Length: 351
Ligand code: F1P
Image 1 (cartoon, rainbow, N blue to C red):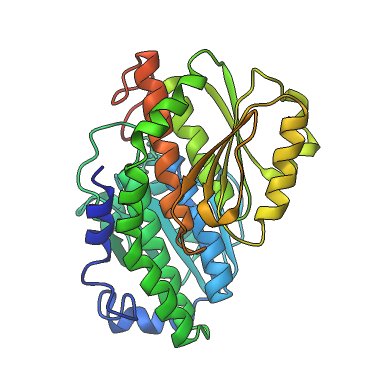
Image 2 (tube, rainbow, N blue to C red):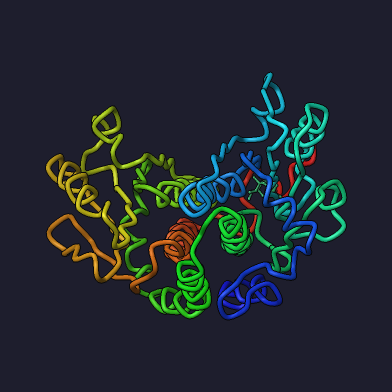
């Protein structure tokens, strides 16, 4: 529920009416961004999903190639790092052992600069990075990241725009996206107002052991994050797939015991997504769709639709994460698990 406030706080001082990060990163940053030819993102868990979303923004808006990898894999393999790479670590705590190890190892291989998106000032990650965007999420009490994720996304979108400005993004397009960023806190409030409807929806998951989350484009990592939240706090097995991969395997799992959750923003991918939904329905799977009200997804037997506010395509991943967090929360409460302290998990994985 703090998300509207902390998302706004994350943009404050860094976003004017039409431009982001003008002063916040300083002139050195401008020189640096001018010469970045590749972005390598490293993170773990929820922060990794934020990086997955950012790849869409960086490539679409800045046209700069971007790779994303979990730190726990990156640190243990041989890799080639081009010298004009910006090495971008995302971490709520700034103390995640794998993320720090990956950064230290990459430093030996050489790159242009290290940038951090972090929530804790003075953390190891902040100290060891050349450039930092602090998220203003404030302390997270729960182990499962929620406001940390949406503020990371906000910071990553501001960074993507700053990089894009050095790579030919028009002023008009920048101003359009900046306007959309300003609308996010209000839109998140609108989603939070759906709480009781989402609570009602959560009852369908009570007696289920498995679930599937589908998304297309930048909503695929949102589906991954939704699945992670459900497994972390309700202990229901949840698997996320890019919707187009459904027929390459997971469709075999679909039956009435397998709820399928989907996020459907209003973009050119929505028609393809609708045909994926049909594939699920034809196999008796029960669908729970969070859809942009302009996307024209209609409720039918076995197809539950939660109408969400119409959101700019670029900012949709930030807004559409929140109903999935709420769904997991309500399923966990119904199941009686400890939402703040899930079994076997630690807030910060420092070893
Ligand atoms: C990464 C992370 C969190 C998750 C849990 C364990 O932490 O996977 O996303 O919620 O708390 O650690 P961080 O590097 O973002 O601090």
